[in-house]
Image 1 (cartoon, rainbow, N blue to C red):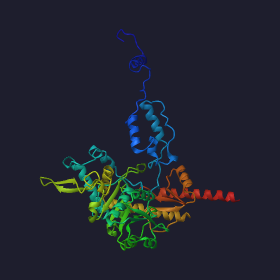
Image 2: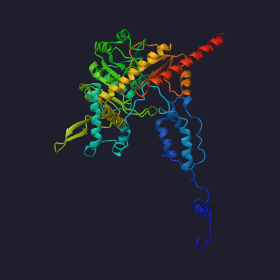
Image 3: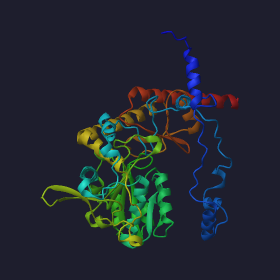
Image 4: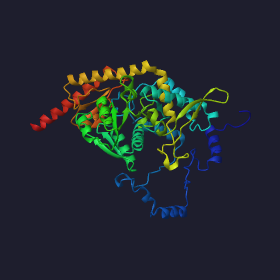
Length: 481
């Protein structure tokens, strides 16, 4: 040791650490300073202006039974290593689509996403670009939006598409609002076979008084044309058709469109983008507005979001479409370029006269949809749709052989409802056996089948569901005896 006495390395660490950590702890203390944006006098003045007595009054619209009454336990501070270990342990409690097959759909689907999509989305030019107000430095993101709009127009058969909206439900609500404004009428007819979340969003928009929502009965899982005919009158602004509908069934679109036209009502179609690879497009059906959720196009399920809503309209509705619209032009040198155009948003000159308060879009999610469509192409999209449909038919046949019953018998695309006495208990049993089941309905399970599933997985699903039904039957017999 060159004439020096040996010093244990542990002692050296302890002596040096004491200089920086007087309490002999090699962890940082929790940061206790609280961020308070407004001092108490400002808060008091704000409440007086609003005519409120406390901050709790700001949340009066939130139901009392779902409010948190106690403070959250903070616990002791942890080192980064300890915190990471704890979070990893918590993550192991989750079940994801890579761990077991999933048959849950109901508007959010486990379709295959090419690896190139997520790889390219991670480029900083895309995930940091947001507001392309300066076209001279935003040509990349503007072009990507323009390409997305072009692909959505081709997919829906419509003339103009916007740069995307928040989700399929908000896109439908915006479409209903457009119909009320254009026609000068208020009545919007929604089928009871519409996605329930979409219906609630439309009802929320209707609070403004610009439209009034009424429902069309769907006793067989599809719109009853006779019931629709009885509801139509000269005050009907629009008829909404979901295709396929929430239960996976295909509506008699041609008949419903003809009935809507008989009273000069607009036709709004909420469509599944994957299904459009096989089915007639909204443009071919003669719809005025096509909307939907773009999640199946290259976007993961993401625990329910973020997703994107798409909207495409006829040319005569071009100036009514909400959100951003990118157009193609030429610059001062005659070169192809792109700009934002036809902006009728509330933050621009129209203000309160704007037809929408949507002033943003899901640019990154829309870009994922654009990339997905470009990578798979028309044939790849059709193959994904065909494989999903064929597997759903195979599953239907296997359920029939196993003795299951179905509440609806209309044509379907990739989803259908199986009658189950206790759907929640069935889902719990399936999860115990490594299967994520379907969407729970009153007396049934809505099951979805995508191209990611296999016949072997379907066979296992049917087997486990049959086991559960037999077990329930045995228990009932024992109780009766």
